[in-house]
Length: 189
Image (tube, rainbow, N blue to C red; front, side, top):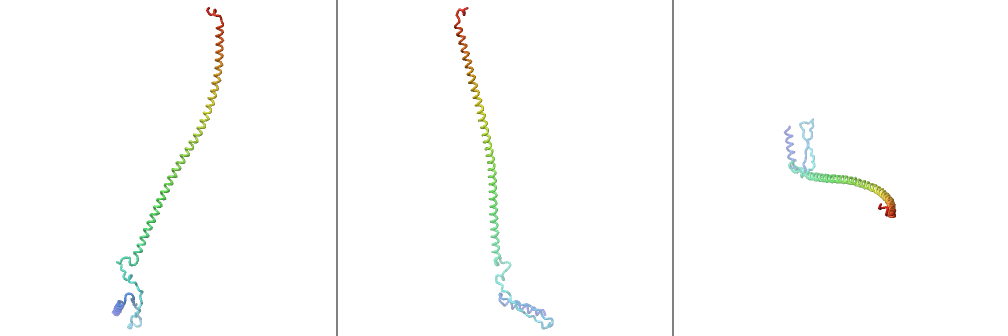
């Protein structure tokens, strides 16, 4: 009984190997009827298979992956990864430049603030000096006024001294005249 199955199978194998590989036929075994065991024959039904391109039929695990387009897909992925890396590098460079600019701006800001503080101090110094100059001018005016007062006092005292001097001179002249008008005889005594 099993020999018959083997024979049928072998015939099918021979039959299918004689056909072209593109249009191979597959045979399905149909179940046998349980009532008629002796006359049980396998009915063979031919099922046409889908035509398989030769490149896929010949695909072998040892063949390179280019045969089914994986190599180009991998190349595209590699190029995309390189592009992403390049974009990442550009972003990193931009961040570095932005960081440098921020640092430069911060440094300039600090320098400008320091300069502004110095200029404010210089402005305060100038205001203090102007005030000091005004105070000095007032003091000088006061001193000049005092000097003028002293000069006036000196002139008054000088005039007084001159009047005293003239009085003294007058009195001296009177005394001399008096001495001269006296007789000489008395002086020898």
